[in-house]
Length: 479
Image (cartoon, rainbow, N blue to C red; front, side, top):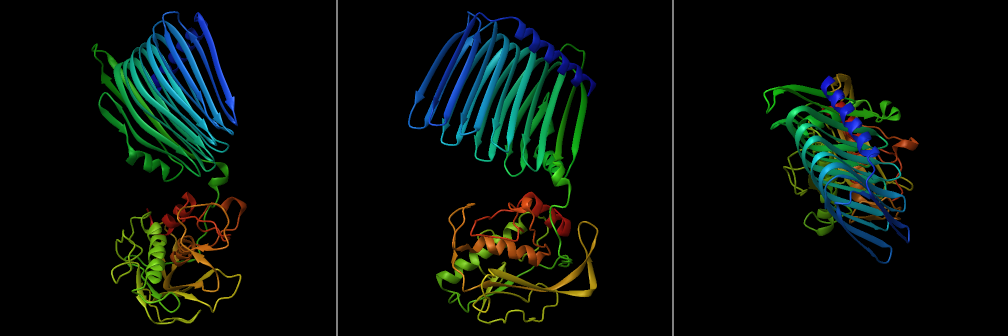
């Protein structure tokens, strides 16, 4: 990465030179209303033409600006809505054209920007919320660039993206995402007449992720397969290459992709219960129609669909087919996760499971009392072991039965929500209980509230596994 470091130093020097050559025209445009705010600073060469239009509505501010010219130009945009902000900066020495659109409304701020130019040019966008941030950057020395950038910030989520093409003597791009769980970054550049194409999207919410590609002189170096690899743990990868540039001289390129877990995430973020199902034993549940109506009725089909969605959320996050079938429509049937039975199992009764995945029951029953919402009974052998994907020995599961409290009020929620509710969402609770069947234990820490295996629920709706839940799944069954 020596060439990259050298190139970075050259870029920094270029920025310094740009900053000390003072443009002639300075303009600041600011607006604020109902918690929404925008501010733009223009330091423009006299050859640069500018058009800036802002609109103010009820709690909404939008701005569109267009500029074109040459010489030395510096532009920065700041847009925020109740603490969530997007920012952008452009510095150039040469020909420049840029079109930028920003919007701030409620708790959401958004920016999109198209930039093209020749000479020396650098552009950066950022999205920031209270707990997350993302950034995209690109720069070229003595060359040409065309880039489309965007940034978004809302409550506890920020995203950004870039689609960039660079030709020149040196160029670089970077993408980063920061969340409470981890930081991800992709940084790459070249030195020596060449080109760079970057299409990367960053997302920071509960966890950070980066998706897309990075290519040098037509050679794809970073792609989603590489990014999934580093996201699977605390990993980093570097790739360095040499090439013959257009002048017949030697050029170099390099890229580094990194995933860093936050200190609190380096500790145990999941807990296993001590059992695991044997390999190649697809689990299937028999859902009793005792309280939910006939297997042909709408209510029973609704319960079966929501439970299937919960089981398949675990299934789709591992290559192992832990649940029967490859059900994508979440329909009950003998070849899928859920089949119906008129049998009425007794809470806590052993149904004669042998670990073949067939003797597992689910039931809505009034034999459970408040405050129990649902309970999973799992039987496992004390003298038969199977090996998990993490290399550890686990006791072999024989049977797992799940009971939902029929004295509680249940619902099928239309969407995810952190709001409390007097009714419990079938899919949310089923996903949690299925995690017990697989061999994961409850979590009760203050930092576990966003995880499927968190042991408390006050009517919130949570359908998707957190990264910690996936780590637990992968430790048992692999990716």
